[in-house]
Amino acid sequence: MGRGAENRKRLISITEGNLRNRHLYITGHHDLFPEECYGQSSVKKGTGRNLTLLVEGLPNAIQTDIATGSGNGHPRNFFRKRAWVREFFKTHRLREEDVVAIERLDSFTYRIYPSQNGNRKNQAVNLSKGEGQATLLQGVLAPVAESTPSGFGDTAFTRNRQEPLHRWAESLFRERGNLA
Image (cartoon, rainbow, N blue to C red; front, side, top):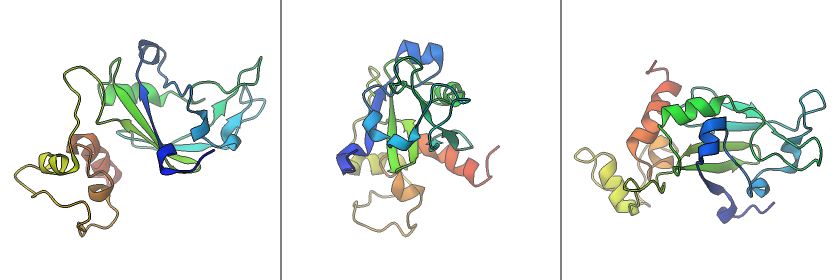
């Protein structure tokens, strides 16, 4: 598996099948995941090493592996545990053609969130860094150069600087116990 920056993040377009069956296809993206995470076709036969999925908008991290097919042993094209997907779709009001990002934080930890550069017609947001910062908290904060330290360390304010506030603020407050 390549470990370069270009292989850290994948964009997945939501299909009608994803919405109907409540899963995310990871078809064509198996190289993003380590070999140790692939388990047998059933839990009884054996699981792979768990991945930790930090899913935006959900209060708890998801622990899951990726199953292989019973007949051919090839990796299945979605995560074994997928009950969380329904709530993720609902929380973010995702529809067909929306785009979800899966970003590798380390070998076994991944962040899943709606991509701000989704391709839903008339709702695509393609802002430059300066425009994104100015729009984020318009009238409250002046745009800040990317290299300018924020004074917050490695917090959500710097990690998510390019994402709209409504995409990450709710989960940030939930993590800190300030939102039910």
